[in-house]
Image 1 (cartoon, rainbow, N blue to C red):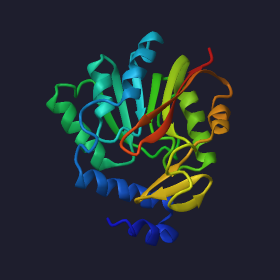
Image 2 (image 1 turned 120 degrees about the vertical axis):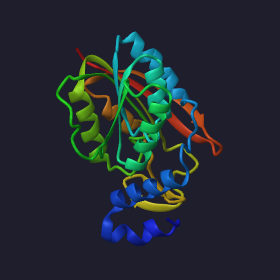
Image 3 (image 1 turned 45 degrees about the vertical axis):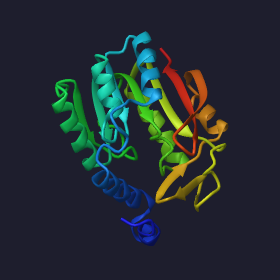
Image 4 (image 1 turned 180 degrees about the vertical axis):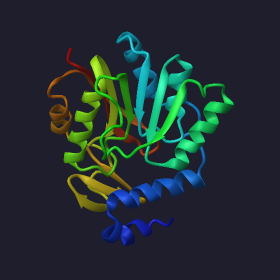
Length: 228
């Protein structure tokens, strides 16, 4: 898919559908695009989850699975979700090749829909840059409410988002609601007010600023715990 196709299709298909197709093509054209080394937030989340006594981890937006595989190697049982079947096929293949298929379950799911899980059924939830995809503020609040619903009391939620101090904020194609598209990828840039509003009813443990990538991207790593 070219850089121009998402802009052309958006009026007919909607930004969400266009972004899904864009990620499908990206994963197909660049298998294992993020490599095998886990992200720094996943390494940090491993310690947070262990301290919380977690055994099961739900990862939202797992992609081709570098972090899901890391959690599995660390001894967790992992349910990895993504809206890209192509990315999840790569995850399943990698898990099988590394002898981790018994610890990793991959499931296609769009986070704009309710999580297909029972109340209080998971110990921990991880999402690296999933919440700052092309989601509206309303959709983000609904997703965090779903995370709270499926987490057991005392369960930990660790997520990362690009924030309004990032160099790409205000650049590229404006979609409204602090969503900006650059190079075909649409990002919802978070203000600190949005982070704080998502923590209401939780115990907010950490908002840590860090940088990632060559730009560099500027992000927050947020850890919050479901009230018992």
